Image (tube, rainbow, N blue to C red; front, side):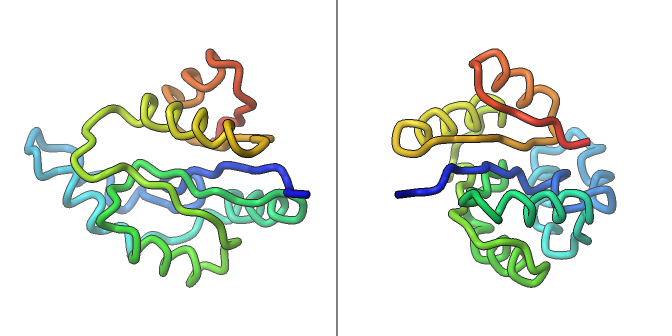
Length: 142
């Protein structure tokens, strides 16, 4: 019997991105590239890490992030270095420029086809609202 799934966002939920938010201030298309490239230097958010550990007791963790798939190894390494629970890593597909709220909804609905999704935790109010409107169990990480 498989355990239910807790879906956790990374940036702003378990990773403190405040040190790199200034990289999004310009109108340059490269801003998101620079923002994500600095992800390896994020401190961990203790509240988010604590929640991930609590959920991992009786849930399988799925890490769902808007980070581009090219950062998969950096992200896996960062999660391990922070001592966060292991889990499947689902990232923004190469070349997919859709907003996170649409991609994350799509990914959670796909996951729900094969697993029981008990909870989704995300810091982006647009993602939270989109998931709530779809009737998914969601918690806003503040």
